[in-house]
Image (cartoon, rainbow, N blue to C red; front, side, top):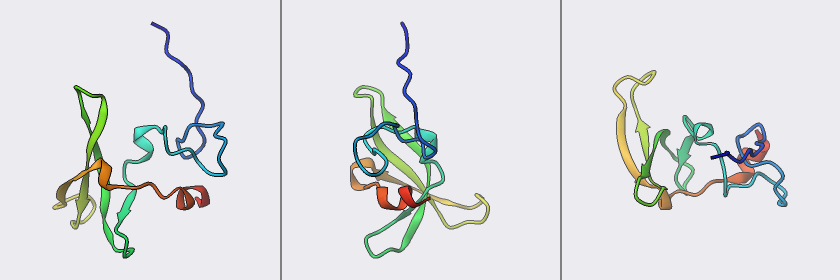
Length: 95
């Protein structure tokens, strides 16, 4: 079985998008690891530690957020449904 090769930009987003910014419909998972997550009041909730995949559907089911702690020690971990999150492509495009 031959894998399709897809080029990605420096943010891991699928290159060649017809939009003005990165295409959030396809990305490399490791580009999301460590990203900060904020609520709508711009309060930091934590950072992404893991993406959990539903093996039956092949879809991301939820993300594991880490909050608190210092240098990764004593972090509290929270499972957040993937559908509860939204990617802010304006922030990513400005990086």
